Image (cartoon, rainbow over all chains, first blue to last red):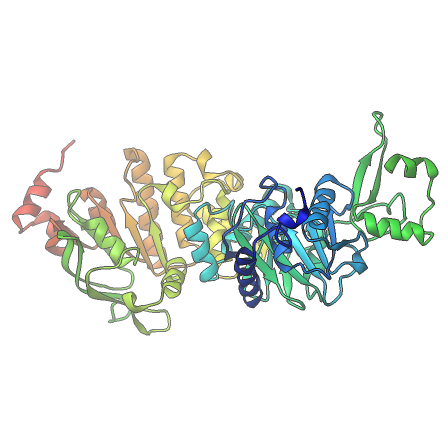
Length: 292
Length: 258
């Protein structure tokens, strides 16, 4: 009697899904606004994507195709287990190909391949409040959002420049959505911030422990905060991906041995594999094997 | 100079349940004028100051403020957003404990620059230059600009708090025991600085203090409070040299002589 039918479709009960969908709809109606929701216990620890999983469970249907990435990779523990979870409880098709997915749940990356209309990107968010480390009181941060008092966010950027000579924030880089709410884009590298701007895909953010959902509807302005004399800029890399030779993509450093050997490869594994299949890169057999 | 006051308060009362915070207080404050509110602890000075600065809402009474465009606005009818905007542009509030008025975990420069950023300045170089200028005006060395206020002494913190408040060129500053808890030599320097700034900038200020010497040094006019009511008010020198109300006479005669 271990039949999978003992679970409701996509694990959550229908009432919970309705509640979460209402929060999502409110989030879409007010881009960047954090909507409180009654986060449920999930069969995984907080910090492993309970918010993202609940959002995905509430929007997924039998016809959807799901892709899950963790730091851009389809083959890491978090991505594999969440993918297996939905395969089991929703019996949906899963994929690693960005273009084929209708829902992409992500931890801390946006795929390199541009998303298209109709796709939904679900972010896992640890701390949804961008002002939290500057103002610990929730009552006060809510008031600041309500009254659009965002001077404090620039205090953080000022501190960065004063201490490091440049804006040293490299991930969870604050953005302003549709000219109104300041939002934490989740700990994605700031390299991905420009991809959020006017994206044709719907972007949903779920924070399970903090019980907040927020959203960026398709074709919404997402502007990274900066100073006039210290404008926002993304990370650049000196060399292309060691495997597929891609430039202008986000790279991970991979340690090869104990003697300082390392290489930089695409953090987006699907993008990298696709490029190599298309014949890009030199493909030194040795390193490829090492990675696989 | 103008004949019109900056702030007009009439019949202001604040009750905490059946207890009186302050009762039936009326004030007219002119631009560039410093008004001291003195009295023993529990006399309602701080309640009055909090009501005037809209940090507390009074139980009854009205207060109107003449905005920069010359329009009179009733403080307690303004929206919270407008009041908070007023608080960080045209007004300042100097707390007795600098930790209440400063962000202790961010650098001195950012503390001074916060108000500028809050009103939309987005040029780092300009913000920093203004911060340097203001630090020198309150006698803090430029090389301390990137230090956090927790590395500062009590007197420096208080001066930093003053700089942070004055950077947007406010016209009215509220001060709650600005020299409380400082030793006398530091107090003297701070008073000197405050007097200079108030005169140079033509600030109007309402200073709450229990220290009559501070009131004498800083203010032109003075109000003596007891049990939430104003028992005497007038020119500072007149009140201190020729006190009329019995309580004021007691207060003046209680000053310790060195």
